[in-house]
Amino acid sequence: MTKWTPTHEAPEPLEGPVVATITGGTIVWFVLFLVQLPFFGWYRDEGLLWWLWTCAAGGGLGLIGIWYVRRRDAALKAAATGSDQPRVSG
Image (cartoon, rainbow, N blue to C red; front, side):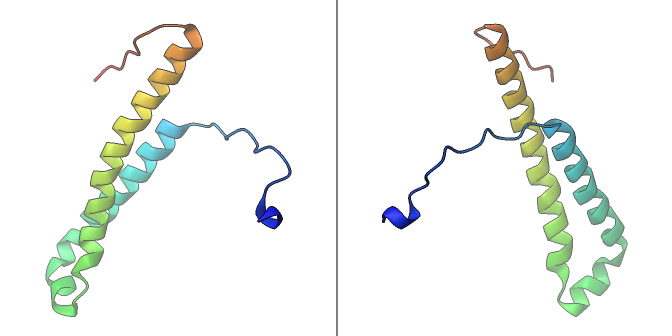
């Protein structure tokens, strides 16, 4: 087991524009869904309807992701300022 034990400390996690990244990805999923929607019949006939629903699921999960990262960002900012309650608009 000692072969797999790390010998150095883990680096700090990278922080970036997380809210913007998740929002952009969510928009892309919804755009892909809307672009494929006119071809619903073709996807159904070819047995590829899962492509359409994958994009819809990606958009829906992206909305949950936006909510999550906004709350996380507010909590991190509140912790940095010493406040007890994070404030999130919306």
